[in-house]
Image 1: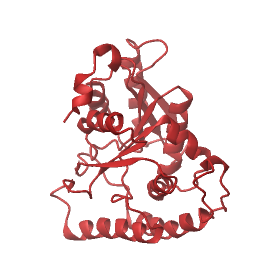
Image 2: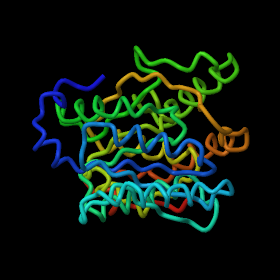
Image 3: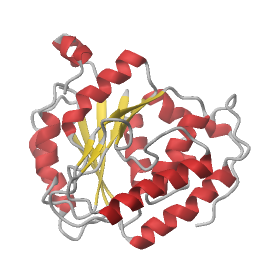
Length: 279
């Protein structure tokens, strides 16, 4: 699935690609070692894994530290292969991504990819995502379940499929957007796009973070490409997406619309007028 542009690049060029993969974790101790191995098998010598752990009771933070010790022993001094951010409690998906992306930018990442730790997002798509970004000069590439060719795990029942389909239709209708997969958590960002958005001013937490970021992408006129992926069910562990989280995301969509009602494409996002969103 490697994009032809990536396959054609010389090793010296691949060596210069500074790609950081941000993975928030909560109770992912059994998934993280396999995820790290899959990421480091990709053809990007300077790929970095940045784990943001929310004090997982199952010891994910310790597993991440052990992976850092192992992989960083042979890493370049200026580019550790694994970076771990330990947070004191379960702070939520949105704030975890903001913390990880902010750290990636501070450390000089040119491309920042966000993904889950549970293999619902396959690392095998990453070369294709980066190849599409380079070929199209896109600001954001989304691994999408809802463009032609995108598929869901065969284990998803009718109720779960309907809920996912409805959540995307609901968000797209309220926010008047063309993006097909509003709640996708598998996205590749250019550095410039994240800097312009102003991560420190993102207020959505939980899964509404994905909706707010998608909304800003399209409203600011970013060049955005959705590529089809097969979304697998998690291999190990339990999903964090329960009914209360889904309901919160639904009403947060209205808050996003209200907060950015003054959005001006000619003004950088970090300088936009934003009305406070109650927590």
